Amino acid sequence: MSALSSPSTKYQRIHAVEAPECMTMDRLNDLDELVVAQTTQMLCRQGCCRPSINWVLLDSSNYDTQAGGSYSNPFDLPSVGGWIHEESTFFQRCLCHWPGSRETKFVHHAGSPPTSLGRDDYYFCTIQTEPTSPFLTSEEITGNIVAVHEKTNTCPTGCCCPPSNQPYLRTLDHEGRYLGETKYVCDECLFVPKFLVLDKHREPKFLLRPDTCWGGVCVRPRCGGRSGKCCRLPFLVRDPYTKVPLGASQNTTDGEDYAQVTQLWSGLANEVCFKRHAYHIAFPARSSAASNYCSKEDKLVLIGSSILIDVALFEKDDNDK
Image 1 (cartoon, rainbow, N blue to C red):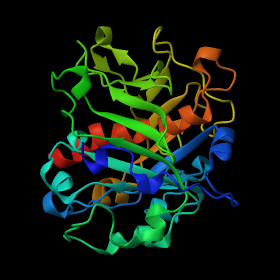
Image 2 (cartoon, rainbow, N blue to C red):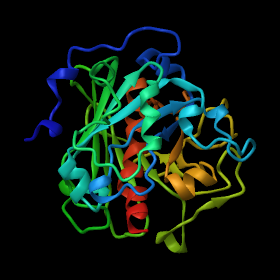
Image 3 (tube, helix red, strand yellow):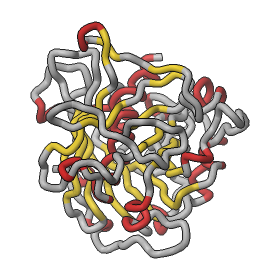
């Protein structure tokens, strides 16, 4: 087992500090929604020039590209006190054309994102040889760790591989304890992507799947939403057994009825030029049934789910284009 596929000891003794606007586990427990937005721009950055991809956690009420229209960089938006950096070797980033298959690790930090996180906007066609962004310091890389989302090499999505080889993302806390994981599900409906979310006991907790049409064989997108949701494909958070969508909190800013992970329209510059992605997560309502109650650990796993959806599905689309 490689160093990236097992909990690294450098994370096990580092705790998230308590500070204003820090995404600690206690603060995460109070949030009903947030936005996970990519800060790394991907213009002319494929193959050997592919960098590690970093993220920030944003207040969803401030991410409204439809109304404001002026936001071009998610790093400029108000943070909710958390950010994520990726660690993946040059070999994995360079040679894995199917991003969902690469071995990688996303390290989740509490606190405001470092200013160095956005410096790669000004670098094109550069080669990153280290597992992490060269603009991050060692203190930033190892400080205030909340969790680690990680995976080993797997098959890409859409392949008829055994379930154990399908893309997944395992979530561990800062001490390396298992919190849950998200697994891609391959069944007879190959054109409907779906993800199973397991809890800390490795039991099915949620199913992420879009609505369908044509007898369940095709996905059904939605149009006409607000806050970057003019045209989208929401992955609704469902009961894993009945597949019934779970309700979202009434405090969500866009008035969505169901808990979901939804890719947002991130503005013309991000979508066309920089290839930055953003996802809105509406957590299940706290009044959900006991079996579907979304704990702070489950919320952390759902943050990892949004990253796996991006890595397994939408990064592949960008590579194909």
